[in-house]
Image 1 (cartoon, helix red, strand yellow):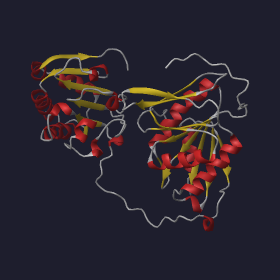
Image 2 (image 1 turned 90 degrees about the vertical axis):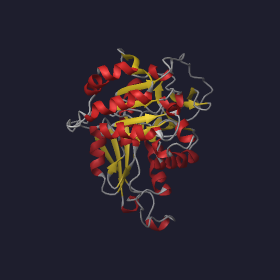
Image 3 (image 1 turned 135 degrees about the vertical axis):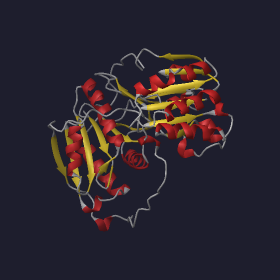
Image 4 (image 1 turned 90 degrees about the horizontal axis):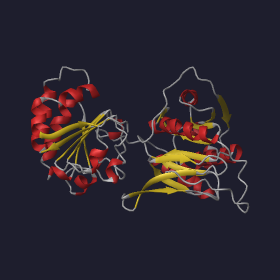
Length: 378
């Protein structure tokens, strides 16, 4: 990620008036998406390197409490735009508010969550500005002054390598970032910040699209909110083996995930997929079973608190991300672990210390070639 700092080309436009990092807070019915607070956490690091303020934009109706939350999660300055016509997300009125703020506040970096709403809003804004947009970033960094370039990285070339995308000639520099990739700062309710109110720029009669109702999908798996995930890959050999993973997930109080290879093979539905083209997750505990560890998958789970990998190939790349590794026959190891956890069902929750004790049992070790703890922090 290290790059030689470039000197500003005198022939380039003067963007010195653009300073600061702006996070567009996404909310639904007054509840902020977690990715917004995660981006504030990452934005704080970027702003510190640039010696610039961290700003947030909150749009909606009756959402003043989210402005206070944005301050508590690290924002130095929050712009708040409340109006009845902003109750529900619609592209035109929301993009007009964003464009007005960008014109007035002149942030050098603007970040959105890579959600359906965030992608739509960011794309609409980029079409009206002389700038570009990097989509679905998984790493963010900046070059210090004088270049002040945003280094927005994401998997490329069929997820086989990381590409860092720069926007050298235009401002603001914009990107969407996936949920679960970055970590929110601890909420500090005592923190002080500036809240600036804005006026809405469109009246209801000027907005063509109308929101009639929301049809909520029930029973859909949301991996991004799960604390324990038991994921399987090509090494399972077929769909039937996912029943075994479901038993382990049930014993742990978790859910079943999958690699892209397993989903593409039709063994399990796409809503279970973890990775670049699936969900990016940050669980407390992640089992990677029969998963080789290609970049496409690891970019979606590498931020888990504890990763346990089970694979018959001791050279599998997944072990580079694992805190604990088990090499052996997963069809013997997984049932052994499941049985051990079933004995511990009286526990209120599963923590990393419990995982340590469980995978170190004599029964599990007898099925594995080795079990190792990665001592260095990820």
